[in-house]
Length: 230
Length: 230
Image (cartoon, rainbow over all chains, first blue to last red):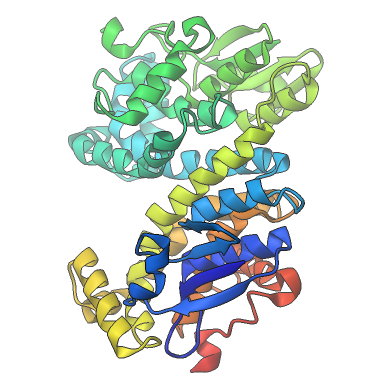
């Protein structure tokens, strides 16, 4: 088992991606040697048929890309501890929860805040307005004036999700689970409160969201969109 | 099973957090009724001993907070499909990978880019400089002048991780797994290439990183920090 990885002139093995692989090899309890490669030296890794490290040579198998190496180790070395175990599913869902609440909702709320006040009664509208305006330090009208920028930031914050949905149909894999419901929830909120869409129609996240609306016989779709009510 | 949740004047059930719970209830195949609550009406939910919806009443048990409700459903209704299943562990680790690469590395790279060129040979330094300067549209020296701001943005991007580490010792739960190695890897990169720390010493993420350095008999700690080499 040989790991080809970036090596510095001072001897340091400094690649972030290589460190993921190194830790994964230790986790699996697999012995390995390492070969340092200069970042500008493509010839040293030409054997791999591509130009980037880390590369793992595992007997006759050559795997590049740290994520693919992790999947290879998990599949080929079942004896070791799992790299993606069952307990991790629960624990990582908590991370999704924290990310959606702290990053995605924070990015989305300015775009939809004014719209929410349009669907609740006067008492709730005053309550929500006070909360949003305190939180954002602006009037709802000023926030709304910056809606285009907020929507853009929200879409950008979905970049990692978009990358994941290119590889698998749901965040939780082949079938949806709570991580998907977490991510779906701010989009459902926006769908219900805001007459304007927050995603572009051809966005892979929008296609995933449509699949989420279809689940359980269209359970979430049965709640009318604001655009349909208006 | 009764779900207390925000209701709007137009009839809409618009709470993002409630929608996570609604989908979780459907996922578990559990029948439930719902009770709409105005956001300003604390009296309606005083029975729960706190002031926020969603609240689930499951027989004699009252649970508030969407995350705690999900955990309650998973524990109390084992008959249904798992909300945090084993396959999700693998799938969600992919999301961690995408987030670290697209958000965290993007936030960290400007802080450490100039430092990397100080540990590699002249050929690699030129190669890395060209790549970074093209990617960021600035000279490395200009990037480095903005290091304090980049470090601050990087620390802020770790907010969700910080929240998770208050609830569990590792991203993957009680024991580390590949998700932890992914997150560890940019911090190990920074430790190796940059003489200045990127985390504050009293940061919970820094304490977690120290535990990661201790794993496998100090395997990752054995790679010298730049501060120690300098």
